[in-house]
Length: 288
Image 1 (cartoon, rainbow, N blue to C red):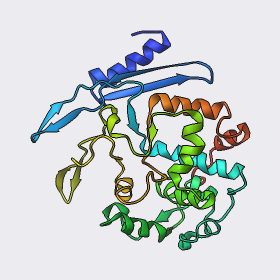
Image 2: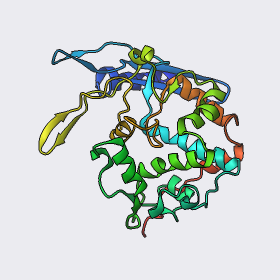
Image 3: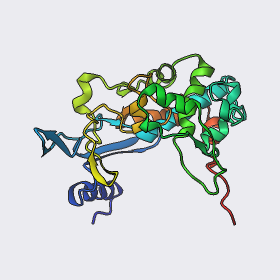
């Protein structure tokens, strides 16, 4: 067993990827504002499906490989909201109804409540079961408050709603705002809402997810590289501008390192705001 911290970290990653085969690949970056290290281990994807058969896929993961960031996309939404707060276009205590009137059933819910998972938001039907993107979006606009949560919980819905708050407050499409205020200023050249065809072969793929649907095994074969894995975002992105507020951003490990340093260095938000984000406000106090 190694004792050097870097070697110990690489040993742990190798144990998960090569020995236990729990995951096909892992990319790691660590450091501070001025220095750091990064490494990758494993493959871009576990298998590929050819002519009805699964074959091992040995394309190597690299530090510039592009990941579907999934719920890490919520960080971009959070940054956008706080940039608009610093510019006086939003307030944490501002009711959503004063920003976007389409969410009439939750007009009194505050921006802070949406950020902090304090509001138990519920649609009248599953969005990912909708027939079209427009039908799914209509369900989202009709979202309403459920019973107050009795314990801390996690939901996509607040970030999904906040995408529209960012668009309304900025008068820009969500990705245009992120691109102009986060991606381009930091030089994040491998961060996308839609991965270019030329880079799909370098994109990590959460392919062939297995589920049990109506008592039978079901295999998802409709998620090739560059397709957002989250089912709600995947449906919405078929007809509406991507990404969603909760999922849909794609980026490389190197770009996410740039983002972290941009935050630490004050390139996106003030130090005061960054420290404010670090205060734990998630959920409500657990009962005694």
